Structures are given as structure tokens and as C-alpha cells.
Image (tube, rainbow, N blue to C red):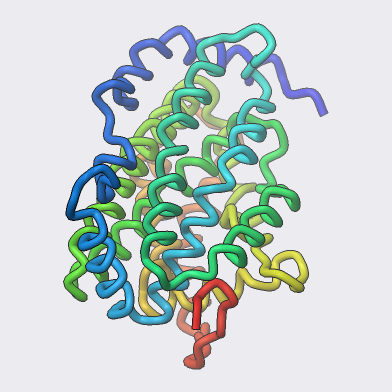
Length: 325
């Protein structure tokens, strides 16, 4: 379905500021960190000693924590799918490059480093069945994504605001848990990735805030719709060899909840932070439908809190094919 002209006008209005937004939220390539900055240098004489230390520390990490780290890596490596989705949003034109397509490519270039870095770390760790991990990555790319946003820029950037905040939490928590086991290298790796995700979240929240300033009623309705459908994680189709599409995601999610890397409470907290960031309670000049949507959104965190109190996470660990015996 073709989107309304007002949405395209909103996209064009924000695009006029894109050069400033690019410099504000993304770093110059030559000044940015690269995976090789954080990993042992194979040209150096102590390379093998550093690998031995990585492998020794990896063995000290809990099973669930290592499973979550691998799942996070697979999620980061499916970047081509996310770029293809963003490039298809109404108002973004990759055939006639505009400010928005510049944003998507620059964002992709920064994000691409995350999967590269984590993949190399896991390869060096000696604890991963790399073939099984690679099969999961290929499946996830092949299966695609359904983020329930369509080609709508409002829904899409609401989604990315939420998702970047979620990935920031996940990587930051893995960093904290890794540091507790003495794995300072992995803590640093996840910490720099988390910092990227925080910057990206700020950018997408800024985009949405500008949309509220121009077309408040329609984006309020879009936010209500996204929260009613629930924000699904990018890896919700996750599977392993021999498994069906999406069968592995619940086990991955359970592991993350058991070690409190990403929980139902985090989902609620992110929603509350977005309601505050976009000042939903005080948005003025909206129509009756949007007013009803606001009432729903403001009541939603308490409703989700009641639901979360009834959720029980399995205590038994799932045996992932990713993790070497």
C-alpha cells in the first residue's frame, strides 16, 4: 500500500538535515575502531600466547553466557538483511542516492564491524562449532525477517529505536558478566559494540522525535500499532541445523533471561524510556484516534509489568549445537 504524501514530506524534511545528522551520530571511518584494533595481531611474536589466554578465559564463561554471545554474533552477522529492509522504506531511494540512503550505508558500515569482530573472537576462542554457527547465520539470512513495519518509515524507525536500545543492553550486560570472569578482552569488545549501539539508538530516537514534531497524530498511531503487535527481535527466525525456522529463538531468549542479559523487564524499561524521550504524555494537537492511542501507550508499561510477573523461565539449559563439547 502506498504511503501518504505527508510521510514522504516528513522524510524529505528530515533529509535536509542529514549531513549534520551523519556527522553527529556516526564517526569518520578513518577515526573509527576496527576489529583488528581489539584482537591479537598475527604478525606479532606473542600471537599464540594471546590465543591461549583467550581460549583459557573462554572456558571460564558459563554455558548460557557463551550461548548468548554466539546468538548475538549471528544476529549481528545478518546485517545484509537489515540493510535491504531499510533501503526499501518509503522515502529512501538507493537508485537515486539521497541523504537517507547515505545514512543507511554509513550505518551499515559501522554495524558491519560488530559481526566481524565477534566472529573472529569466537573463532579464536576454541569453544565454538563454527560450522554450526555459520549454518545458523546462513539460515537466518535465507529465512529473512518480518519486523511488522512494512515500508512505513514511522514504524521502521520506531522499531530501530527500540532495537538499538535492546542491543545496547545485551552487549553491555555481556561485557559486565565477562569482566566478572576476568575476561577483560571480551568485556572491551562488547563494550565498544554497546557504545556504537547507544549512538545509533540516539540517532533513530532523534528521527522519530522530529517525526512527532511534524506529524504527531499519525506517528502516535504507528507507535500504538507497533506496541500492540509487539517488537520482535531480529533473530526471531533463528534456527540450527536440522531445525525449523524460529525453533531456536526461544532457547536463545531463555538463556538470555536466565543470566539477565536481556529480560522481559528490559523490554518494559525500553518502552518507558521511549515514552519519556518522545514526551508522549505531553504531545499536543493530536486527533481523537491519536489521543486514544496515547492513553493505550501510557497504560501499557503497567499492563506489561503484570504479565511479566507470571512468566517463568525454564531452569534447564538447552544444549546448543553451536558450543563445542
